[in-house]
Length: 285
Image 1 (cartoon, rainbow, N blue to C red):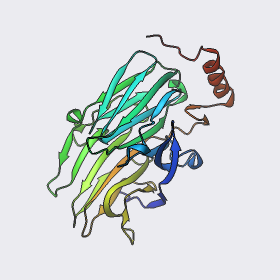
Image 2 (cartoon, rainbow, N blue to C red):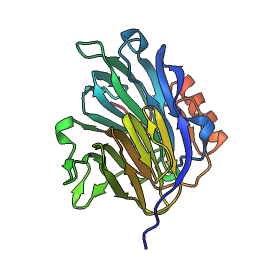
Image 3 (cartoon, rainbow, N blue to C red):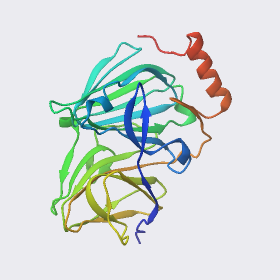
Image 4 (tube, one colour):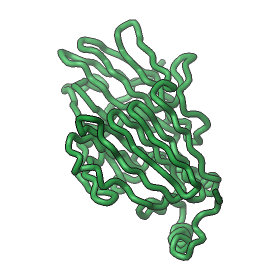
């Protein structure tokens, strides 16, 4: 018999400043370790004010993690130490596996109205893969499978599988499911999840009732679920749009400072020493 998940904890995203002065909302981060294992952080950088985001995220290193950037409006221009150049456009995703180390920059650019809409999720890498070569999966909007169910529910499958439809991003260690779901008003939708996997929803539009709770939740609210096989979301007189993200916990020790996440303090110290002395990058162009 399927076990319906319950709400474990609710978070409201909090204002913070990152990069060279980007004003964003953090849904969860360092202070929530290890509650979201294997995920580390989720930032919401939606804004109608270019002053909030144009300073961007100049050159900085990463090691030991994956950064997942999903853009709704505007674009993010990026370049890295391996000579890669690219643009993440509206509706697209960049799943970057930093592995042994990469230095890159990410510069948000609003649309013609000055609107920027996007999210960055950090996922941890298992110890066995932290020093693997870096790689990118750059996915355009048109490459992301989109389902429309009979009840009007729309689902974009960034990663994971629904029925026979597989998401655009593949071969990730934590077996993630990353979905963008819109449920119209007056609908109840039950989604299958893998028992034992960490799962949460981050609302980005409208209102919805999660797990038969006694009240609806709205924009910029994150809901962490307890364990189980399914999660049910119900709408009343408004539709709801949310990111639904799940993955297999690593259950490994975390040593984290800034953009680098390792398993021990020795590994973390070594990474920063290498960054300082010029031996950080293990892969050439």
